Image (cartoon, rainbow, N blue to C red; front, side, top):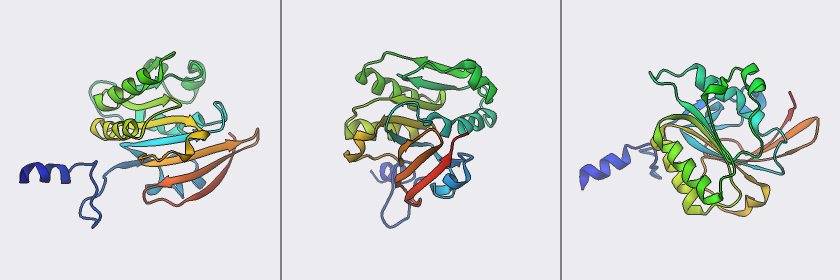
Length: 209
């Protein structure tokens, strides 16, 4: 039993209040200086689960993660190239635009028209598999239990998980490592850091690129 507890305490998914054991992760810069100043560690937690609550799809939420995805691909050291999974995206990824930003479309795994149950299942499997550098999933409703499973799966697979949900889900409790709320107009994007383990709460205003 002692050995089992020691294994748990040394894992990346368990945290003890006295600080003897903490979550270990690498942060990937977003490359938005104002945002990185407030994010814990100066970037996106990897492994970890980032929950993005947005007013509507297409307001610039993906642009926040494109530099990080490029970095993940460029820094990969595994013998077999890992993928970036897009699960139930509202729009098909535009391959020429991604290629122009340094993301090889051949590295993408895209699955659309999934039900909420299918999306949650696929996201958990992809996060845990070790075959993905990052998993981006779009889903409206998810139970607290399901969100916990996704966070654990991200740590088990050493993966960056990004979950896009409606701003209406803000009142739901979430175990996500980092939680953001987005809104904006044609000129600027507002990013509110709703929850950050070790980060600075507040709102960051970014000019659109």
